[in-house]
Length: 447
Image 1 (cartoon, helix red, strand yellow):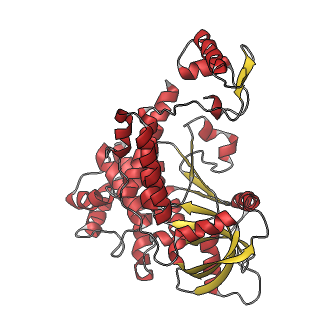
Image 2: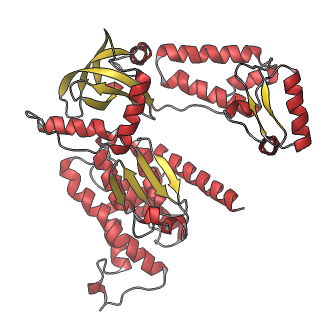
């Protein structure tokens, strides 16, 4: 515990975390000092451990062993060959020095890492890591989503390991700015003899600052093409911070699922109804005082349907925007869900339906008409727009599944057949797991 604190921490705080009395804590501190630990401080003031003290032999709890084993298994299967081999060697060394009962947990299959990423064929991650560690410039042959090839000289900053992508953040000499490059789109890479002009640690801080301030803008230099603009947007979006405002008991689940499908890093901020959701700081983001909402760089987007549409556009690599010939159906059913299904189901659940005379005044007409229309559109279809999964499916399936579960939407064979495979997607299950964690944390904090 002392190793985690760089500044003095009170004996009361240490005793509470350790689950012992303050008297026992004082006795333990004295025992550690007798063993050679340089612990400065005194009762009533606080304690700090000076660097350099190690407790032999090294010992871990069963949960710490599981955490180490799971992390090393992830590295072994989700990085390059040399780092994977290093992870396996580390597991073997740990297993060799641990007591037999704990050593067995290193090879226990109770927790496994699933498939989900293939090593890129073009450029080895080991080469990218070497460029980072030696702080050398890197010459890249890169191809964007549209198939446009370019030659770049970059100064490597950091290598990001996402669920299905590996992304190199670097200063690009061609763009004179920080850019993000997917490893699977690198056709070739060569480490140059020249060192990066600035220390890598300094560039990390500069890049993080740009994440907070940089916006997507059209390049102003002469000779730019539409392909250049697309590429700039693609690279810039990866470097912008995304903050997700939600509550586990809200429509935020839809956006949670969408973010997991997109695969971009994001920060979750949980707000409470009636308090933090109505606070001035959040009202400046969404004056309606409700969730979900996202802030992506300088872009603010509210309303779940709009957020889904925005994320599909902002992260085209996720493949959640249909081909142009299917865009009509995509937008039609995405906003049919928001403008017709949701209000019709909400009013019906509240015990009110517009009379035949009133139906002309309501955009959705009637609850029955909405369900009949949607059932006809989904009959025999796997996806609502085209032949592949899209953001419209995230939005529609979320509403249908939740509505049928709570009784707001009538269960129909077309709805159940459509929802079942979609809500079982890995991204949907990850989002569901995260929402349950947030609910548990909220319940615990309330208790």
